[in-house]
Length: 101
Image (cartoon, rainbow, N blue to C red; front, side, top):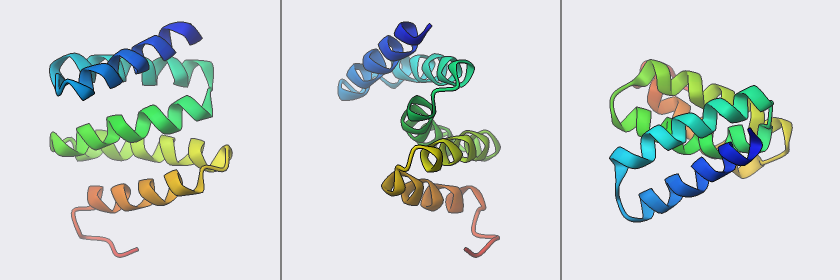
């Protein structure tokens, strides 16, 4: 399962480099779900950050917030402070400006 999660992440990054969002998003979702099942905080943090950004861009603020919160908790768990800061900024965007820091 770990290999499948990693492979989907790698393929999604290739799709993203080719700007093939239709192929990338399902792979991101699969990878994120598998990393959640495996309880791999490094994978949850990294893949979830990218997936959350796509959900935000698609206007799916509720889903984006959920993914970004899980990713933030995972990033904090493994000490990825730069990722935590980035996720805090992204989470602010899910508030639609109604909430201040």
